[in-house]
Every structure is written in structure tokens, then in C-alpha cells.
Length: 357
Image 1: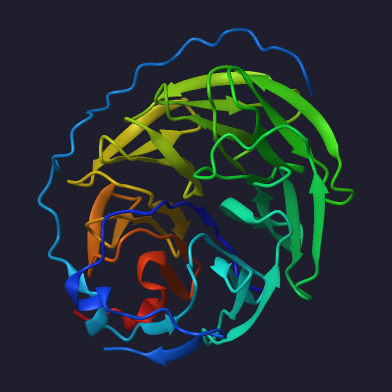
Image 2: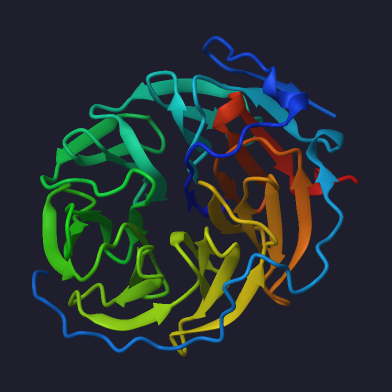
């Protein structure tokens, strides 16, 4: 069984490059080809990390690798491949057919597309034998069985505050933010009954959620902060200031990683200290995008740069990939990197052994 690591994120970003912009949206199915608890917690005391909100890189960036010159498999997929998560033997991609498409993880072959009542939105997550997505019309939650593809839905009430956010799966539940004002509500949904098991009030205007390292992590991009929530009590145990507009997060390699869109940074949060341990400069802002952890690295789906690979041992960018292809998402396991590009109706699957400059 593969170790599955998921991700989150993306809005329409900068236009694709001239080389790829003419790619026509293909008919379905896509084909794979090879290409060269409620209680108001006490107000937390923010910590002050040593972070620099500048889009200028602190180190020289590595020379970009042209993805088209690697052994990546190019998958034509329409109408708009966006958020992606790996679960069981499949890659689940939103924006395929009338809902979420399933692709064989080993080959990249299209399997089928499942309809999501209420429309899939926000970044996907996986766990408890399924892929999970929020639904914007309802709003609600949908569970896609990782083996059978059977869809089960639940109406949660409230309102999804931002389709460019994420749900979190783990720590004994499925977690999602609802509400349109301030404060908002963090729901814990029972993954078996799909009923709301607990509600917690979160201050500010939080949007995205991830779960792991014994905690639930909630981002507030308007205030540049991350709330660390105790999943057993709903209490905020720490509030961490990060870069400018932390839209998406990923958990792994003994840290929480935030993608700070406006400052063009990735913040590494140390769960032992609840402080930013490192700030990695991308050298560019990110519109949409995504961040994931897998294969021993941290991966960021950028805008002008298609993809960044960060070595968590050095907190440095060690690889960059081109061509620019608008916005999309990324998911990674021990075998391969999956990259979506909704602006050009494309998915790439690159095995770790297939990286050739």
C-alpha cells in the first residue's frame, strides 16, 4: 500500500505559455500519452517568527527543468482539471467530466468520472478509505469511496466561505470551515455517519483546514496567521504569524508548510515550538497554486514557475520546473508527482526516476 499524501489549491492564474496555450480541450474520456465542540476559545497570543515578506529569493534559484524534456506522461483531461488527491489506487481530480475524475495511479490511465451533487469545491483530501471534497451548493461534504467510487453526500448547513480553500481529513474526523462573516465555525464531521460531531468557533475569517501532527490547522489569509486547534476540545492552543496571505497548507516531514501567496514564500512551522522555523523565498508571487508533501520533499505548484521542489532537510528550493501553465494543483507519493493545469486542460504524471534535465 502506498503512503498517500494529499494537497490542496488553485484559482485561475496567469495565462499559459505560448507553447501550450493552443492546446484544445479534449473530449472525455481523457487519454494518456507520453510526452518529451462549540465554545469560544480564549484569545490566543500570537508568536513572532523571523519571517521576511519579500518576493526576492534569499538564495540563487536552481536552473529550471523543462518538464517536456523529462519522461513525464501528459494526460489530456477536460474540462478543467484542478484539485488533486491520491487515495487507494487512484488519483482523484476535480473538474473532470461532470465532477471528479479517477485515474490509475500506476499508469495515469483515465478510469471514470463521478458526479458530485452540489459541485466539488475547495482542495480535496483523503483518509478513512475515501477521497473527500466540500460542495459549494448546499453547502456540504462528499465522500468518494477509494475502491468503488461510490459517492455519499451530507448537507452541513452554513456557507462555504471560499472555494479557494481546503478541507482537512484526519485526527478522528473530517474538518471544514463554514460561515461568511467573523468569527466562523469549524465543523468536525464523523467520517462514518457523515454527521456533524462537534462545532467550534474560530476568530477572524479562517478558510482552509488541514489535519495532522496531533492537531487541526486553520489558516486565516486576511490576518496572515495559522491557528493550531486541539481536535479533542476545539481550543486554539497557538496562533502563528506566517507570510502574507497563507492560502493553502500541507502537513508532513515533521512540519506544517504554508503557501504564502502575496509574499511569495513558504513558511515552515515547527510543531514543537509553534513558530516559523524557516521561510523559503520563491522569487515570485503565487496566484492560485497548491502545496503538498511527498516523496521526501515539499512541492509547490506555482504560477510563473510550474513547480518547485523544496528539500526539508535544508529548507531550500532544489528544483524548479517549467513551462508556465497557468494555475493548478499538485499531489505526490513515493512513486510519482502529479501536476494539474486547468488553464490548458492537462495533467502530468512524472515518476521520481524520470527526472532528466
